[in-house]
Length: 413
Length: 152
Image 1 (cartoon, rainbow over the protein chains, first blue to last red):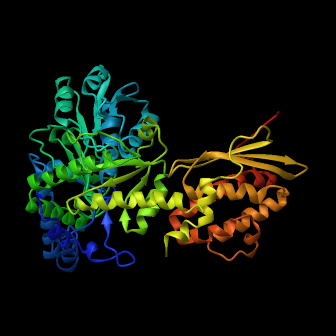
Image 2 (image 1 turned 90 degrees about the vertical axis):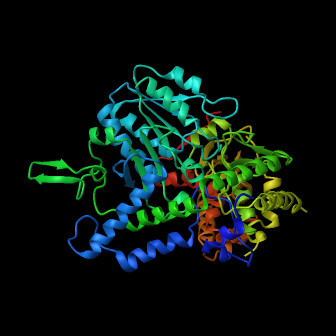
Image 3 (image 1 turned 135 degrees about the horizontal axis):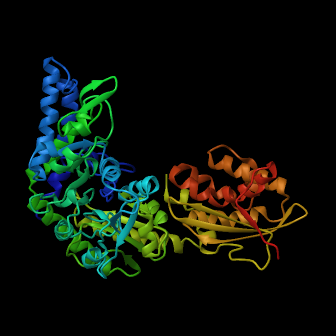
């Protein structure tokens, strides 16, 4: 293994606790949310215990310290994704909030009835429903790029669907169901050649592969803290400076303003223009600690680990009788998230049965109902892996799947 | 807490061999229920004569708990008056809320679902068919249910 998983597991207090019956936890639902290392939990605790105060408002020492920590976390994030400036990093509540911000600030100011947005057919509801809501509000049109036979975005089809009315391309960087990793670099180049901005939903991509804005020069990038070892309720929106200056603010309130009069206001500098109200300071600091933790392990090693898991899981799952695996069947451009159905057993039964063995997987539509329609299923089970998972956990998963099937059939007298 | 608290043998049996499964030749009321969280869909066909449920069938897709529960329900409701149906549905609901229900012993294999209360995330599965029929019988109270009446 490229990283010492046993050692990494020891950094996560959750794995020291047993959920029931003293059996160890096999956690295969990191695509939904990830667990937290001590470094993150302690960073939040320490902040509340020693440095907590209002940010960018107080005259006193604690406020200055809190501000320094909060803005320090912003710089950590900026460096991590190679943004040119921390003024391009907006803290939000998560990916969903980040995308809703774009539909409000970009959608409502830059688009009008009949204008088009291109999406993929595997968007998470968080990069679909806000656009459907925008369509209801101002009559924009959603256009979908089709799949390649390998279950990725067909970039040629996407290019063909660009029209004079295309105002934004908003696609997921990695599917939370199929695991396919989008060719965001090519898509951004295609779009920019036609003068169209690009939003990447990085909720799945960023935690597992990082992001390099010097390579993928997208205009907007959204991701969440809780899927990358950070706290829940904090997320990021990277917004290219030119857009930050041009777009109107999101929520109104304290801190996003410069001057306020009875009949008007002016907005604050970037990025605070988009951060109204007292922010989730501890969340941002926790996310900064999560990024530092991942950086310390090293992204090359993390990506090697992800690829090793993906290769092994594909090999094992594809050679299992009665297994239908969705998404790319080869490891190229693929992350370690595996949606599957097994021998016609309903995903919720699979989920419950595995739960008895302390194996946590996801079952259902994974917030991608239209994709379920395309796949022709009502639901799937899904196992997703992260740095704290070992290859052996794939074996454990498959062993218990087979036992579940026996239970559901043999139990009949 | 054990696996067979949830998957009692009788439940697995109803799942593997659902009773009264499939679209019947005749019915008076058909009503559809869905559970969007898991994608389960169920259709229930009721034949009603003189305020008595003379026949019940169902079809659909779902997990073992929802299919087995629908199967048990068809047996529990057949031959009952609409008023009795209301009582049975209320009793089953009560049991799934974790309250004692002595009468549930009398409703086919309904009592087997008592263990489901230990698994809060699965209670909805067990209730799908019953909630679906509830929409029909509660229409007596003047509400407009989402049903279509077969005119054959």
